[in-house]
Structure formats: C-alpha cells, structure tokens
Amino acid sequence: MRVVLLDPSGQLGGAERVLLDCIDVGDGWPGAEMSLVTLAGGPFVDAARQLGARTVVVEPPASLSAAGDAFAPAGAVVGALLPGLLGFPSFFRRFSAAVSGFVPELIHSHGIKTHVLGSLLFHRAPLVWHLHDYLSTRSLSSRLLSLLSRRCALAIAVSESVADDARSCLPADLRIVVVRNSVDCERFQPEGVAADLDALAGLPVAPAGTVRIGLPATFARWKGHEVFLEAAARLGRGSVRFYIIGAPLYQTANSQWSIAELRQLVEKRGLAERVGFTGLVSDMPSAYRALDVVVHASTRPEPFGLVIAEAMACGRAVAAAPHGGAAELFVDREHAVSATPGDGTALAVTLRALIDDPVERTRLGGRARAHAVRNFGRDRFAREMRSALTGLTTPAALIQPVGAYRS
Image (cartoon, rainbow, N blue to C red; front, top):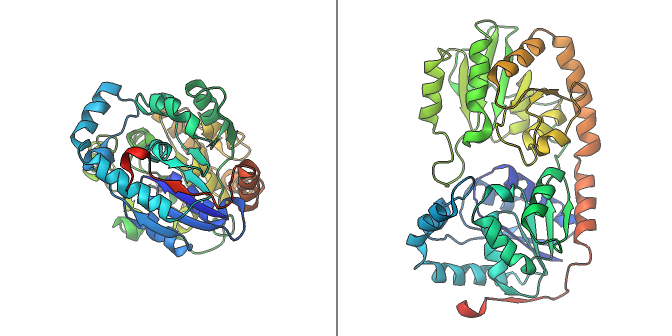
C-alpha cells in the first residue's frame, strides 16, 4: 500500500502529531509505504523522516502560506490571496509532480489548504480529507470544499462535533466517519523523566511543595492564554507557579499571540515572578509529568483537544473547557474537571480546589490514565483507520497533474 500524506505545515501542531500517528501505524496497513508532501519545512518534516516516511517540501507563494480564513470574511481572504496568483501555476505544477512521483494508491490530506490542492489533482487514487477543523468557521474554504467534494472519496472527522459541523457544510452524499485521535500511551505515561520547567523558563528553582500548573498550547488567540493568566492573577500569591508551554507555530497572519504580547499581559497582571514561558518542549511527556495540573482553556469549541488526551495518558489532573470535541473526551470529575469556557474566575475556582486537594489530583490522574489507555490507544486508532479506509484503494493507481498544469 502506497499512501501519500498531504499537510500545509512544517511545524508540530495537533494535526501534525496525528499525521505522525498515521505514518507510525501505516494508516492501519502494516508495512504501508508512507510518503509526505508538505508546503513548508520544519520539525514536523524531520519527525516524519525519522519514522521512515519519504518527504518532499513544495513551498507555495507567500500569500498562500499567510492566508487563513477562520472567522474572516471571504472577500478579505480573496484579497489576501491575489498577490500570489501569478506564482500559483508554477507552484501547482511542482506540487502535482511531487505527489505523482510517489505513485500513490491513496492520498490522505490533513489540512484545509491541502484538501483544496489535492482535489485539484487529476488522479485515480482515492482522496481522503482528514478534518481537524470546523469548516463552518471558514468563509472561503467551506465553499470551495463543498464544490470540490466530488473529488473526495471519504472525510474522516476527529470528533463527532467536527463531523456534525462538516455535515452542515458539505453535500449529504459525502461519506463522513469519525476516528478520534490517538495517543502513544507507552510514551505518554506517568513514569519517566520530568522536565525542569523552571530552567526552561529561566525562573529560579521553585520552593519544595510548589504546585505547578501549565497551559500547553500553540499561541493561537483562541487557546485561552488570557483566561489562564486571569485565573493565575485571581489565585493570588502562594506556593503555586504557572507555565505557558508552547510558541507561535503557523504562518497565518493575525491569528496568534506573539511572545511579547503575552509577556505584556503577564507584566500587566503582576505575574512576572509566578509565570514562566518554556517555549516549545520537544519531549512533551516530560513536560506533562512536571505539572500537577494541566489546563485546557480554549475559548472556542475545540475540534478534539489532544492536550487533554495526552495529559490524561500521563496521569495528570486536567482542568478543561468542555465544548466542541473536547467535551467528548472525558466525564466531568471522573477523568478531568470542567471549567466554564472563557471564564477566568470559574477557572480560578476550579484550580483552587485542585491546588488545595492533592488527594483529588491523584485520584483524577489515576482514572484519567486508565481512561486514556482504553479510549485513545494506538491499536484502536489503527483498527478504526483500517476499517474506514478499506475498500477505497485502487491497486497500482496512478495520478497525473490536472490538465491545465500538465508537465
């Protein structure tokens, strides 16, 4: 089985970590030949190579890389794309050649930009869209994908919430199935090395008994950094330290906090001595192990919430915003604790209860670990991927560039 995976990013965001899982399990086919075409280089591409995938980076015009249409008017998105139109034919020829060079029997796209690009290819190999986002929030992409849906053999949604949203945007005859993301529960586990978050953040060593609370997230503006910092300020001084784990990952304009902006928020709230910025941590299991409480604070519905699943697998107590796909991952006060989305006061109350009750933190962590092993393991993911994709493939299928861009 020859599978070509498509992704717009070279960074290690949530969708890219899921794509690495697809490479690792061969999309459910043991021994599958996995290849990857991305629109940017970076640590994600390096990680894919380490798993044995053949990789090609095909960079698009800068305006295409920077354009994003989440919560943006379609007209504004089209205007942002216009400067790159002259360079698009040359880029698309290179993209087509890169994909066809791997002679795929299945094309599996993991990003909205590559969903569109993959649909423009003239191919016999089935095309699968893996939906990691809410299409209804994207003014232009949702319309394009609806028009191009006949090119798609199957859509895989990462949650029931994402599937329901896709059904509201795409034609009814497109088959959409749910395959929830997986976690490597052997790597993400309670036992093992814990990261020195204070050293990573440039903070002095915390006193013994300090409760460590972390927000692992990209710097997307809807990931709840303001909510997290408001809660930290409301909790007052004491033997508690807070960590912002992550960095800006994507090239999309105006969608992310800068480190300078977040540091200004910390200074404004008088939290400089209690909040640390670790930057990206390559060994995320070690970061989770170093925390007593992991916070998920997204202010918009979360398509899945991989941080929640990973932290539960590491046996951590989790405080999470239960909307969107995140609400499907746990039962409140059984595997994690819910906190009202977008409400720093409510999050502070939730965190205060966990800070003051180490026994409850331990109980939640133990139940979270068992829940994650049962529901998010690699074997389950591989089995469901194989079931979803069986019957789509065409042996020895070849693709050719779309007619307008034939070499």
